[in-house]
Image 1 (cartoon, rainbow, N blue to C red):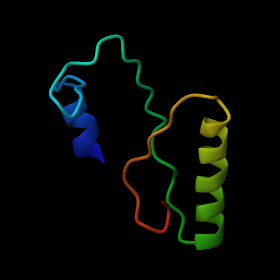
Image 2 (image 1 turned 180 degrees about the vertical axis):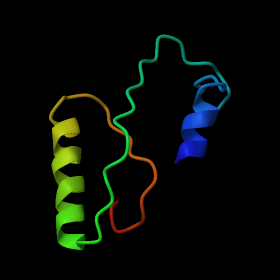
Image 3 (image 1 turned 90 degrees about the vertical axis):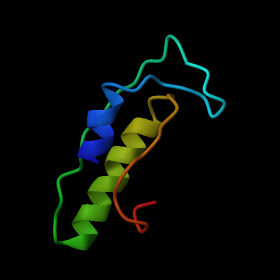
Length: 69
């Protein structure tokens, strides 16, 4: 995830066709603190995702494992 964050500082936002996207506002919510209690951890992920969905903004989630998706 840190690599994606690092590269995003230098690479412009573009479409699949390579057109630059102007006026794009991005918010990085950061990482959900990892917890070995899986029930708590996935509960925390669900709560944070729900908060973001409730903003009415378009959300993208990067990183994690397939069970989070």
